[in-house]
Image (cartoon, rainbow, N blue to C red):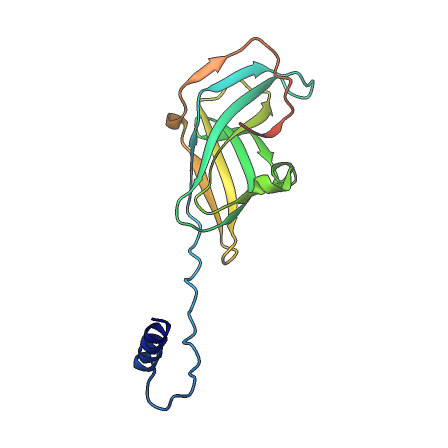
Length: 175
């Protein structure tokens, strides 16, 4: 029986070969191209207005957001900007820069197909506004392309008010 199996193996090997019997180099396989990152960001709960526990701001805004990468690309999250407008004129702005977002460093890295929820905490002083615009800035790791994603206010579950001073520091917190 051993000889039958060995003979079949030799015949099968010979049938797969071609021509000269010499070895041929395997055809190189080109890895698939890395896609560009595509990111969406939405509200992930209600915005919550608090009195600020820090004397430099009157109020703190707890902003739960969800960041999703949908194209199997990767990106670096560079900043989160909060701007308040009254009659189309910007009256106040706050920004969480790369130094805050990258602490810990893994938070700034948006992986392929990532779906994470964060809380952004912004401090501010004005209550006389009619529009809030939240913008996130990213760099595509594939080619360095810079792009922004705006978080629409309609994606939040609403606005709540808390009378408890917010003791979490301004910055990014993973939920």
